[in-house]
Length: 343
Image 1 (tube, helix red, strand yellow):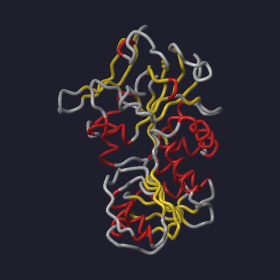
Image 2 (cartoon, helix red, strand yellow):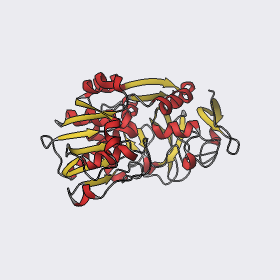
Image 3 (cartoon, helix red, strand yellow):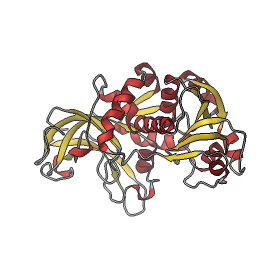
C-alpha cells in the first residue's frame, strides 16, 4: 500500500456468477465520496474487522439481496481511528484521533465495510470505543457481542433474572451463542447450551453451560403444541425448527429472544406457548438499534465480558484468509469468534 491508496478485500461478481474475493490496493477515491470525505461523514483508518455469519453469506455469494452491487468491500464490523472529518460534523460526535467502532447500520451491505484499511461512514454511526477495550477485543465482541447483550437485556425486561430457572442458548458454539452463554453465566444464570456439534461439549461447559442439549432434541419438539416446560428464557440464534422446539418447551411467562436465522428463516409453531403459557417472543435487531443507546450498551458489554475468555474464543486471520474462513463457517458452523486483522 502506498500513499493515496488503501488495502481492501474486494468482492467482484459478473451478473449472477460466482463471487471472487481478492485482496488488493485501491486509490482512496474509490471510497464513498470519491475524492474527499462527504458532508456529515468521516474517514476511519481501520485496523480490525470480524467475520460474522452475514459476512460469510456475502463473501461466498450466498446472501441473496444482502449486497446488490459489485465490486463491494464486506465487513459488518470495524474498529479503528478517525483520520478525516467531513464538513458539518459536530466535533462532539467525531474528531480526528477518536478511537471508534461501527457495527450494524448496513455497514458491509449497503455501504462498503470494514474489511479494508480505510472506510468512510456517516459520523452518526460511530461509537467511541470504551476505555480499556482495544480494537482487537472490540471486534471479538463486534456485532455478535452487541447482539448477545441485547438478548440479555430483552430477558431482563421480560422479568427473567438469575435464579429464575435455566436459560437455553441455541447455536451455542457460534459467535452470538458463545458470547451469550459466557455473559449469561457471568451474570449468575444457569445456562443450557444447544448445539449440533457433540464434540463441543467441553468448550460449552468451559464457557459456563451446566448442560448440553443436542440440537436434534429441540427440532423433534417443533411439531408439538407444547412440551415439558424447561426454560425460563431462551437466546435463539438458529430460527426455524430449533426456535419452534425452544418455544414449545419454554416455561410459563418465559422470554425467548430471537436474533438469528442460521437454521431457517421460517417459523412453524403452534400458538399454545403464547396463549397457554404467556411466553414472550422478543425479536432482536442489532442493525438499526438506536444510536443514542449504543454507547451505554457497549460499556455494559465491555464490563461484563472476561478478557481471558474473549482471547480463548478468538481466532485471528488476515484479509487473504477471509474467503476460506467464510466457506468454512457456512459449511462446518462457527466456533467462537474470528477477528480479521486489516492493518
